[in-house]
Amino acid sequence: MGFLRPWEGTIYAVMRILVGLLFMQHGLQKILGLFGGAPAGMPAPLLYLSGTIELAGGLLVAIGFQAALAAFICSGEMAVAYFMVHAPKDFFPIQNHGELAIVYCWVFLFIAGRGPGRFSVDRERR
Image 1 (tube, one colour):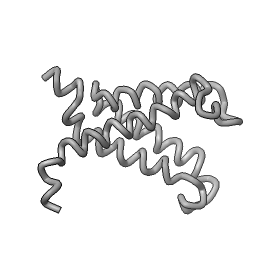
Image 2: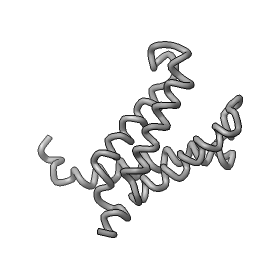
Image 3: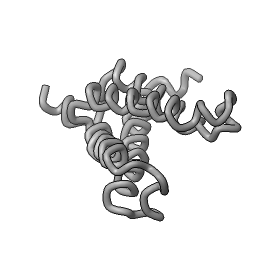
Image 4: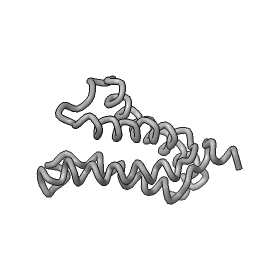
């Protein structure tokens, strides 16, 4: 699909921004009780730690400030979330509802490896 080649950097930047904003909503849910409130039964220390990573990490990824480091931390959080919460329920992600955690984990790892790209604070600072 060579016709998309000129748009590669812009498409990546839009993906980074959207993923960061979507992830940030999970933090807003846990920290501020928005979007239906925090998940029931989650211990408070874990709730606030994960919520802080999701809120701050999502924001940093979205604006592209220290995006590689923030994405790496977010990726790790999602790996932990998958193995702590989802994997014990069932082997298959479609059955244990862990698909989103896996997708976030790998997209954030990709962002950590590729860097912030266009439309980012990090790029403007250089």
